[in-house]
Length: 191
Length: 158
Image 1 (cartoon, each protein chain N blue to C red):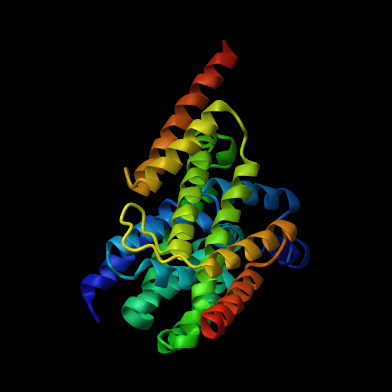
Image 2: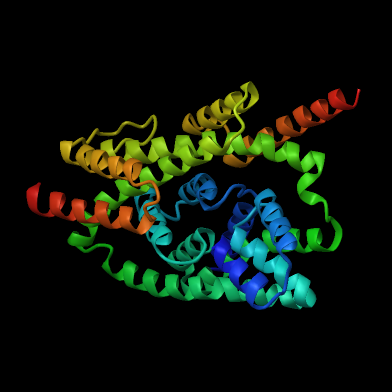
């Protein structure tokens, strides 16, 4: 157990909790930046954690905080990371419940969100592109080490992406399952 | 999640009214953090003050924490298994698609105007080319949004 890492976990997830606007997916860019910069996880392991957190019940934010906390510092780490990611919302909502009844129509709040939402959409697009390059071509942006491209990875992408475009309400767990089974078959038996 | 909250908090236990429920959704969407946490905190506060908030939030967090700790313990043990690795090679592509679809979904919900296209481009390029940290990019968006909204309100009142 390291007190330093526990403290870092707390500060990192508190920061993530403050800056997550627009649902669970909006926190993926910030998590990726923080976790990779601190060398807690490799990008591919983080993506595995995201897959599991999306396919289990409960809010994604809680699931991923618990998962990363556990991977670094066991149960204590998971509790601390989860507490940290919840705390900003908790404090902000209590202040609003006590004081601001017209919060959601306040000019500054409306303006802030009008600016933040499109920026977040752009940020999430860029993370999606980075994840695709990483998982299909093994490219980390601007550090094209060795392009390890196989037709099979593109096949998984084409099949799963088409599926999600046809069947729009598909639950993430099915996407994780289908792509997992395809990976198992293609890498395990064919390649 | 939202229908569940309505079913229990409004219909069954009558902790909040329909109108308050809609207020909570609006507030939850305009504050950071997951809707589940925001609404649990708000409803808990309404019923029993800060103690109520703490208990409601704890209640909504606990199942996830327990489930994930169990899965994480299991996953850490088997992640180096070659078959698990094969499956996750596929899963990583699936996750990239999940994120891509989330971006498309959020894009469709946006008000489309020149400002929002410029902001999307700023968010996209700053992060893709690693020019600025995520928090700073979000803050820049917020400041630009506030300035444009204040100008707009002033223009309307003149």
